[in-house]
Image (cartoon, rainbow, N blue to C red; front, side, top):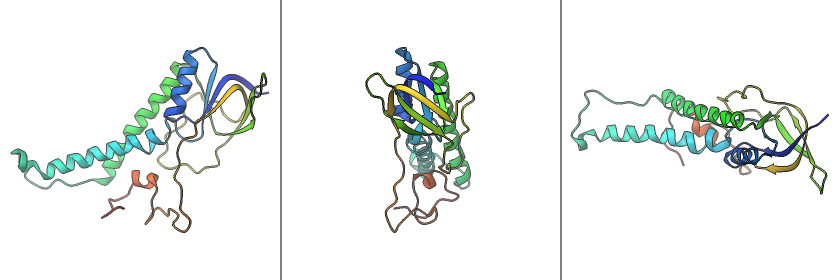
Amino acid sequence: MAENYDVIIIGSGPGGYVTAVRSAQLGFKTAIVEREHLGGICLNWGCIPTKALLRSAEIMHYSDHLKDYGLKIDGKVSVDTAAVVDRSRKVSLRLNGGVAFLMKKNKVDVIWGEAKLSKAASGDKPGEIVVSKSSKKPMEPQPPAPKGVKGEGTYNAKHIILATGARPRALPGIEPDGKLIWTYFEAMVPKEMPKSLL
């Protein structure tokens, strides 16, 4: 039997989770569906980890110009790529946990899986989604699903909001291979820094 909600949001990026929190604050029984990582691309693979990586690059840049500031280091400052990447992943993971906390605090049910709209809402009749295990291979490292999430099943709602966000697109003939052609996923977790990027 289907579980009923007032509002279901598909996608937990900035648009989705903010909508879920506000819906719950307004008294609507609310659920959010996510197949991969709370917080969406921005928090996990885009804006936030990019800023963490850029901060490391900025500090390296300053270290190259210490003399300009009247400072001196005996020895050479070098980049530990694995540690730089690890720091950016930890920043994202911490904020990912913050989104999970917001869902729990505002009594938003988190449904973990891939949603398909099976019936649109019409008049007094609610819409319906079917949630199944995600068929998408997750990008690693992947934060775990929050504790207490709901899973596969059928869910009904008076209002279903699609907030599915961004994903990389491949151009025909130059598909990402993780070696020469990257998406933002590969750019966030390089094993070593490339000599150049375009």
